[in-house]
Length: 223
Image (cartoon, rainbow, N blue to C red):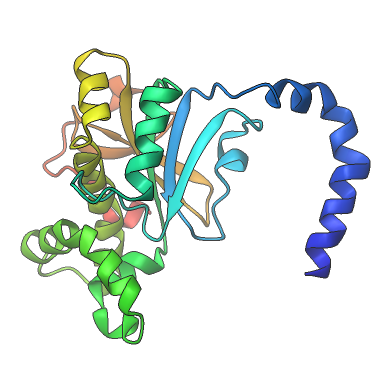
């Protein structure tokens, strides 16, 4: 806690003053262009990854970057998504998974989540991910399966996102775009999903240099 208190003092004394105009403007309202959905993992900092300022990203975080399909018992995720799309008119939605994801490891190895009943219920929103991995990649090693699950989960949650009426309407009107990312913690790389190639590609590689892959996920050794 002492580290946090010292950080607050540093912010108030050394940081706020240099950006006071920004914070005064933000006090009047927000107009982010991107909804960034990612994991609660402490190793991920969306603003640091994207080098954005306060007010640039509307951020939704939870264990496993999961998006429950839209239903009659809409929770915090549905409310956040609806407000971002209808209230803030964001132009882009990013679903960002990451390497070494504990939630995906627990999904593949339920024995590791014994004693966490709430977490187990929450991971039911990734059941499609678990089934795809089990049925399509039965012969892969444990490490490879985790990487595959991380990627497949991003795609599954993107599909869940499309079930939300606000998202479906905005997509139909061409007002919003959905992106799938995977962040590799140990290298700082971000891999973006390319629907045309059905593959996650390191952001920055030119699309015209890609070859058409056989599978929709990148080589598992790449992350």
